[in-house]
Image (cartoon, rainbow, N blue to C red; front, side):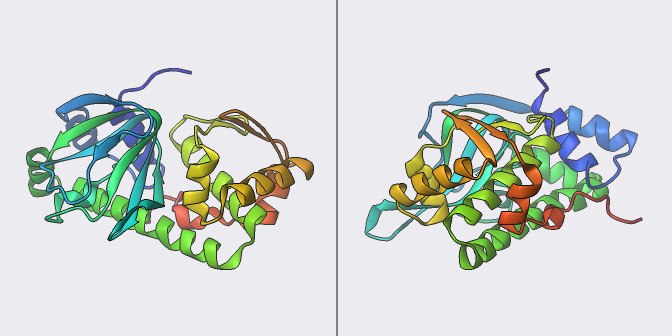
Length: 246
């Protein structure tokens, strides 16, 4: 698979949803970034911090992690971020983060100083609108996670997550042919889905037994996309893959 610069992943992400003019493209490709690598489980951005920069995923996955006050070991994952995602763009507006961003497996990010984002919002109104759009999509995904958690049982809930992550990875060219790399431990899947690791194991086994997926280590092949999407009641419209009308 061809390696792409982070701005190219983000450009693909935006171009799936709207057009980009020559000036917009040129400005995105001039973004000054600082590259950083993180090991599995390492904190990329800590909760309670007041960051002066935001980050985009370059390789691997990251997660938004929350814990209850006084119970730091009871973790809940409320979002997964894939290459091309502007992970903490809302930190550009918020004074403090109420969650941590952690690496899921080895991860690489590009940090972008908020001064760069300020300049874009002042001088590139179309890009500013698209940056706002990314935060709206993040919120839409979060709402759909709540709906799935309230409406679907374990196997269907897991199926919904797999359908979503595949579409998001495929959109930026990181997954194809119904195959994806998902370095999630069963404990991390449990933190996402709200089940015990035992229930997650049963859900994985059920999807295999139905002939819907093949799951070996971190590598997943979706054997029957239609069957998986039907079980999950998956409708990708919340991912807003159609270009906005002019």
